[in-house]
Amino acid sequence: MKNFPKTFIYLIFFVLVLVACQAQGNASTQTSPTSIMVSSSPTSVQNVESTPTPVPSSNPLPQTGIITGDIGYPSEVVPAMHIVAFLFGTDTYYTVDTELNQTSYQLDGLPEGEYHVVAYTSGSDSFPAGLSGGYTQAVLCGMQETCTDHSLVDVRVSAGQTTKNVNIFGWLVPLPPMPQAGQPVQGAITGRLSYPSEFIPPERVVAFRLEDGETYSIDTQMNQGEYTLPLPAGTYHVVAYVRDNEGKLTGYAGGYTQAVLCGLSVDCPNHDLIDVVVEQGSVTIEVNPGDFYAPEGTFPPPPG
Image 1 (cartoon, helix red, strand yellow):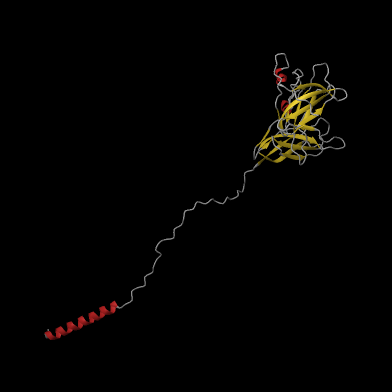
Image 2: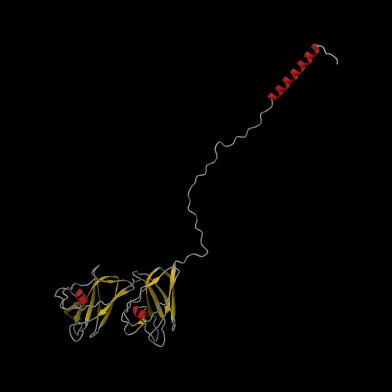
């Protein structure tokens, strides 16, 4: 192997060092890679509680109910009728008309609540208008001679359901007057008339409304045993004033008092007038102004 002088070796080493330094300098002048700045903080989403938008159901729950029933009439034919469902204790009512000889009916779209159902004849050449029949306790009793309760039945209507067999068979009994468009719905009172004698004289039955002092009255005839007096809703005192044959008031009067409820015996000293409540579309029964034994001045004077 050939030996190289030391001087030559040093020269080679010097060249290698110089090349290495140049390469390092070039590396230090290269451009740094571009840095991408990311947003300093992520976007915050506030957790806000929101009310979901209701989506209509394909089968929405019904909000109203239905009443159905049969129609009867004490004749060979059934007249055309105007059937009314009174929402108990309000001025609201719902109607449907029937045709001649129609023997059933259906009332749709009734809100939940309790109703009284009455039919009124529409009027024709054969039947007068306004004769009334109802779904009464006597209908539930079977319409026998012993069925003497003719008060209207409370008919319950529930949403989405049909109340059946509300049969209008109770005719020629005291019922609410037919409602008139634009007028408040009225009720009525009814009762038996009497007098401490073998006959019943003509009378004027007067209802005094306690809320405002308004009076309402009806005149009866000789030996008339019952009366019906249509009234607006309210609370009343009821007195019957005796009339003579010419229709003039005689000064005798009988009231519907606690003594009537007691039996009008000598053991019944309470002659206070009874508060009679009248509801729209309903009849208050057994308001019997028969206490002719009260001390003078017990009852209010008849209205002029």
